[in-house]
Amino acid sequence: MSEARRRQLSQLVASRGFVRVTDAADELGVSEVTVRGDLSALEKRGGIVRVHGGAMPSTAIRESSLEASLDRDAAAKRAIGRDAAAMVSSGESLFVDAGSTCMALAEALVERRDLSDLVVVTSGLTIALALEQALPRFTVIVTGGTLRPLQHSLVNPFAAPMIGSLRLDTAFIGCNGIHPTDGVTNLNLPDAEIKRLVMGVSRRNVLLADATKLGRTDLAVIAPVADFDTLVTAGEADTAVIDALPLDVRLAA
Image (cartoon, rainbow, N blue to C red; front, side):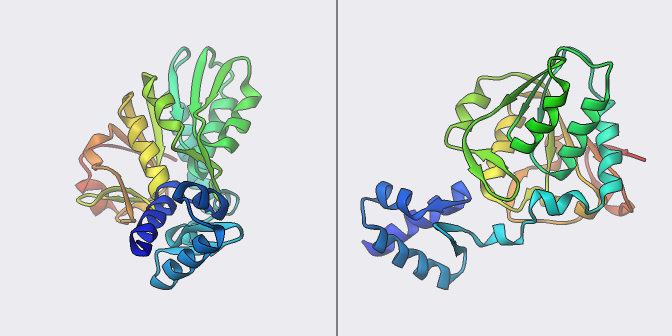
């Protein structure tokens, strides 16, 4: 019974990105002392790490915070943001993903004073705050859901029903890895799930990633590269990887 409970607890941590001891105790119907013991056992096996009040997937520790990522390859991200913003027209509905490259897009959209009647849906709280400057020209909608740390993004359980009720013109999606055969991948499972859901309700899917992501593979598969219409990238790109990608590639400058 303890092993089955630990598997269930491990799945909760992986799917949500962070699980509080108190919440896990309620859901599993055991004491907080039991949950802490289970988490300690799971941490020794790898896969999760104990943090104050609960646990996170060990992959999340490799993930930089949004604030730390903003300054990394900043010039390339600004170029990507400007190029992606140029793809948008007034009256459209968009999804802008969480993450530092999508933050550059949000800032570029705000700077485009010619845009109006734009509906922007986002799973990123910091993205929504950046877009607030464009109100009332923009309508900004936050998906809702469980708050993940580091990227300040919202994931399931409540994000899925909201996303499923939408039909969007364009989804701008960030990632951690783009590989010709392994596909487009992310460091964490919960955010990857939201990205997949959004792609299913969007007419056009645009991948935003600087050149450091090219040829890289990470844990969570978002989708095959061919499921995207366009990649907007910048930086010192590996031309061999770009040539092998089955989609339109825009090199921002």
